[in-house]
Amino acid sequence: AGNIDDLNEAISFNRACLEVQPEHTPSLGGLAKCLWICSEATGRMALLDEAIIMFRTACAITDTSDPVRLQLMTDLATALTDRFTRSKQAIDLDEAVSMHRDVLESLSPSHPDRHSTLCNLGYALNRRFSNNSQMADLDEAILLLGEALELCPEYHSDRPIILRILASSLS
Image (cartoon, rainbow, N blue to C red; front, side, top):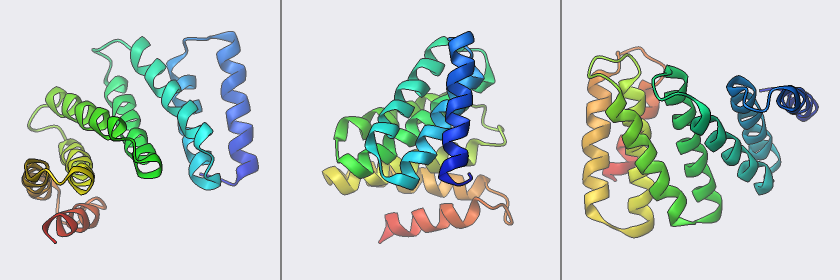
């Protein structure tokens, strides 16, 4: 992630590519990520909203057997969680939880990124508990985060994140 000028240039390049190839998944995903990063840097919700639209479009046109689709779904779910954080619209968080579940169901028990998906789902459930006080969400979050911790190698860069979210869920 670079400065705003670099992000704007990357956005322009991705938009130019989409003018030539409207259903080019890498450009849709790239544009969505750039818009999302720019939204985080500037606080502009309209950019996040557009990023979510681009992620949705990329997911819709990517074949379900393409492994790229799982990453797009993860990015969309995480962007929806981000939008919930800013707007407090519960529907975004409900959709994020559902998408993270779909990704998790698509991964084999031995998939190397399973711990990350478990963490993402656990985090979204923790956020939803904070919003709705449903103990089932908190209980599931703690269970999933514990499983994520078990699967995450001891020196993996995700481990401190999982530990922090698990600690937050337990407190």
